[in-house]
Length: 361
Image (cartoon, rainbow, N blue to C red; front, side):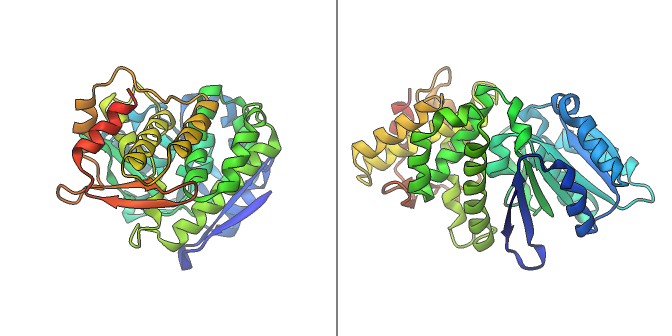
């Protein structure tokens, strides 16, 4: 079991990760003293697979629980779904001290964090991420949001959880596509921050796809530690440090939105966004071709797409202009000067961006 701290003064919290640790969850909840009434937000598949286990652990420790099931779809990240959850939460919250448990992947975590941030002007919540993507990235750092028709994550907040509890055993039933999706975020961390992790991913892809404990614990621990340091130093993207975590995401989010959140899942869209960002880096003379090829080969190695299909460049560009990182007509993109050498570039010529999008078709 590994413990990593996100240092935010009075709002600091721990990231606990390891195999076979779920029975220790009540110990950490009791230390937080956030209440005895857990409102669990999850999806149907997780309720069937692990719901009884989680409820048994909580019940044995004297916690009262209610389960709210939402669809495992990006469409659940909506104001309509959030409103429905809040109404149900209010019905449960009578003469109780309620806290929320986000029991799922990125969609559940985003929605649960958003609900926690607005209900009664903010209540405690705990992340129990069950996908690789959530354990290495989305459950950490306090970003929570819902989508609008015009773009992804446009309504949200920075609202930190009180605990992130990553049980590695929950990853054992993920299919190859889900593992690959999570690996897009792991590859992102390697590209922007850790040359050693990049080499590890090149050499250990078989162990990762076989869900070997040592490999999973290595990448979860490494990525969690990187995210914890960045979130501690630049919680709300003021200094620009946290902005490097958006590598591949600006164009990736545009691809997701342009595809109606159906064509590609988040990790796949980010992979394509990283390929486009690498192409832009090359066009601007920031990297040599061989660096780009090395990154492309690693992305391919994990079964992620490197070519875009079924979405027009015009739709992607339209979605791109709705990105929340725009200031007026000026956007910013995270590019690279090499492995572990990110750079933030502003006001890139639109023709260059269009060319980068065309390069992945």
